[in-house]
Length: 489
Image 1 (cartoon, helix red, strand yellow):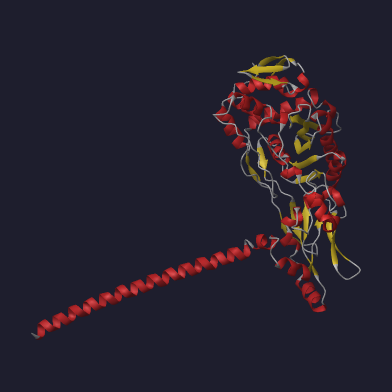
Image 2 (cartoon, rainbow, N blue to C red; image 1 turned 45 degrees about the horizontal axis):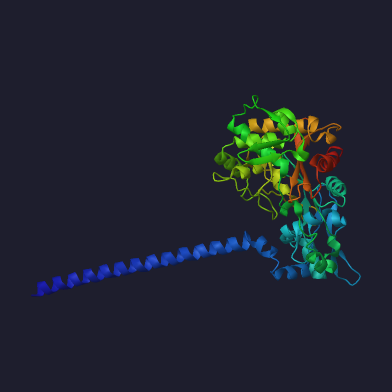
């Protein structure tokens, strides 16, 4: 009996031991789970406070902004030429105010620091309200009750080009935007109607209520327009792709209009261009010929090319922008297809998006990532960080971009942009456009998009003049003044 009791006790102890082991394992697993959750939360907190700190500070609803501005003097914004575009000055009452020496000229791209903030002032709000200067100087200023200065932002904006674009636009409505095709540096951004950022506080209600002119709207980025004949760049690209670059056999007799399956497309001012080949059709901007070209295109492949050129997609831009749209698909009607082929119909694009496409063509099909901030410096002039030149990606095959470069050069030499053919020391290539925007076909926006260089393309410029009419007569000369400013520096 004693042996059986002992055996029973041993079995009971074994079961208890196993139970304790299982309990310990459960406790260990739970402890491990909580440890992992704690580390994940700690990592997220670190990411949120560090990586997202700039976004948090830049939020206009963040009350910490007012606290930072009460302790710091907001840093300066400078052009690539070191011209001061925005600075903070002291008033007679011991307070501070923001000053914009160039007034309206850089209004939309530099922005303003009140009423929600705009432009570079908004994008680099955190930087301008952060002091990374000499520690000893910061401590001394704190002890003596003086404010430290925030960091300075050096932009890629070119003062001469910006002024040339602003002056060339005069009192016209529209936009000009320029960039370096090799680096992605945004060199100039002009939008009109404009405003004086020095007067935003006093005139905010008036500016904000002016819906007829929308002076606060940055048309270069947020404007959305029918591209007109500048879109023939895209149509030509698709035709080149579908024919593997073999377009020498193409020919068309232009009689001023083209009819296909009940749809009629007319040339600008119903001009008859006569016999044209593929290059002539592009240089002379023949709507009839391009409608004929479009009628041969594969809708699905056309849609794919639009996707490759970032239509209906996000753009690699540092500012808010209007997304380009085109609803071409396999179920598109004949009229929708033909209208799209000449840049009309439901197709809409912003000037900056057209600039990106043009820049990619000029850079052998590769788009560089656009940027407007060159570097950040502390108040002592020391460099904190510098932007790196980076590729965004290939948009166009190199062979097709080379063909488009030659075709766009022909537009200036013998086509619709001969007004800007004569240059000193550099060559311009481009495409004009006259985009109808009303049932009144006599009304059209004037477009020009192109690039220029001495031996090879260096910069690209896109211009739109609302209601300007002829792109060759109105928009192209504006672009030339911007090109001149760059190459004469």
